[in-house]
Amino acid sequence: MRRDSGRIYDEYLAAAARAGDRAAWERLVARWHPRLLRHAWRLTGDGEQARDRVQEAWMEILRGLRRLDDVAAFPAWAFRIVTRRCQRAYRHAEREREGIDALAVATPSSTPEHASGEFAAELGQVLAAMQSLPASQRAALALFHLDNLSVAEIAIALDVPPGTVKTRLMHARRKIRAQLEGANDGQD
Image (tube, rainbow, N blue to C red; front, side, top):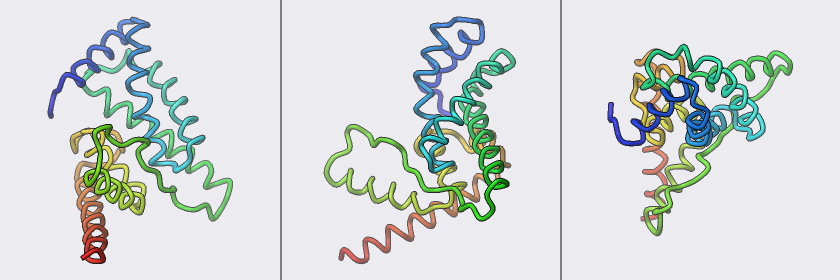
């Protein structure tokens, strides 16, 4: 696992918030809310649903933070709480309305600031290809490549075995590669 300065800072904030430091809690929320919101959006496909699920998740995170033994596990733990909230809401809605479609498509809310020219065009193609993936594959791919989580952390976040994460990543990459190669064939 790569421990960059951002991860170390998140661990510090989680530890301080767990100890009752309100300012650390507020900074932790400010840093993680956009990431959790993007994750919920990828799973639900609906902005309003995503905001509701993340709000519920923050309440659960606040209540459970004192019981989190390893602050380094905060990212995977928080993503898992959001995943479960989204799954519960989906199952509830499915029971109420038979025939509801599968989870809708969502993309990350922003692209890197340095994206320009050819890089921006290629990034746009990749993000568009991600939209066509099933929600489970899209979530695994985004957590791995956009949120820099390890396979083990993604397994915790999505509440699936590591082997399932690897399989989802493999299939997602194949589908995106096939779509991008198809798009490049038409441009030659």
